[in-house]
Image (tube, rainbow, N blue to C red; front, side, top):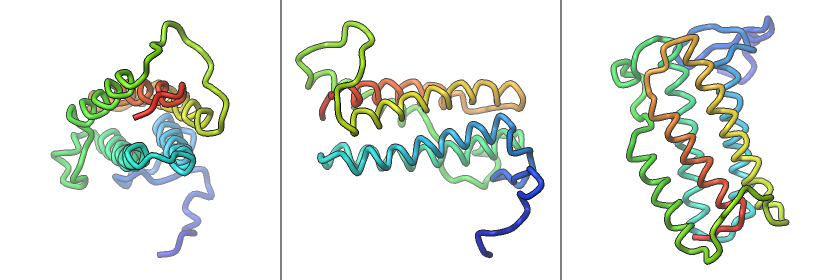
Length: 177
């Protein structure tokens, strides 16, 4: 199958579960925001020199794709991903714990603690991390909206978004692994 299907020319798109929805639906908005985060994380990864941080960003990119598939299927089909048999992975508490581990490591490695909200330091890497943070916050809001419309089962996703935005905040402020 080619990339051009022409099935979206009338303003509808297909979700992972096969459901057709309008392209401006809250769920499509959420998936679009996650797509933006994944892209900007790719830019951030290219600008990062440390192997640990590059590996972490790759892992997060993959997890966000899992989130996108999971919420598309869960919300569109109205059942949990684990019972659907169509997705082998979902975001879980261990993924959140892993982000928390990196947050603690970043905070431990920085001598000066954050006392109030501040601007990121100069440099493209810091700005891209901050853009990622803002986009994750938007995804969080879109997830809540989409969950009101359909039954969003995996509430761990909200926790994951919160931890990820905290991590990105620290990275945007120059914290290092």
